[in-house]
Image (cartoon, rainbow, N blue to C red):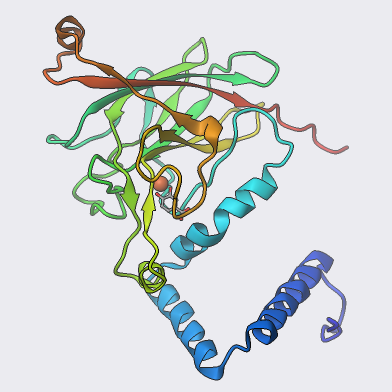
Length: 277
Ligand code: DHB
Ligand code: FE
């Protein structure tokens, strides 16, 4: 199949990718003897995904982990992970140490999440911005599963690292997350008899002026879905155990009455690549 329909050859990569994608899908149709009925059902499914606003979820669930692996090959530093569909730009800017925005009755266990941000050459990175977002203790994301008006930017913040490149936030232990089952993505999974769970995780997007942006996730060790993430995004180097603290003196110091957890991780960002002359 040639791409000779254009009046004038424009954007060679787009032409090449388009022809390869359509060619791959045509070969797939032949290989599996796709019927008209199956084709129409696929079109209806995609149309429903669009109409319900689930295109980002569907694309991220089935394809983003592969894009992430391909696009981060040879990168160095902390391993990247998918951004997913639940990032919201413009979260409140906060100075470390801080407590993430939360509701008066925020459910679950307190988690103190701390870390160092440094460069692959070893230098700590003061002034890095650690954009954090996560599900709550019931597996709900603000702006998506919790109405925005009820809890704007709940468990979301942009936290600046201190002069030593460190940050510390008080948050709540996230629960495993089940992607919405009522929409077309969830219905497709159910039709195949597959579960819709992601293991509990915290999202980070770390930026610094001299470094390459790091988009990643931290996964909580011991989660029942750690080996069967519906998105297929878990990387071993990003799985971290929580430490439980129930010593009464420690609790008193923090003004807590129930045990809390800590999690610490060092994030390593490659230097920004020199601009081509
Ligand atoms: C996806 C990623 C997430 O972090 C999440 O909570 C749900 C879905 C995704 O890539 O589809
Ligand atoms: Fe997520």
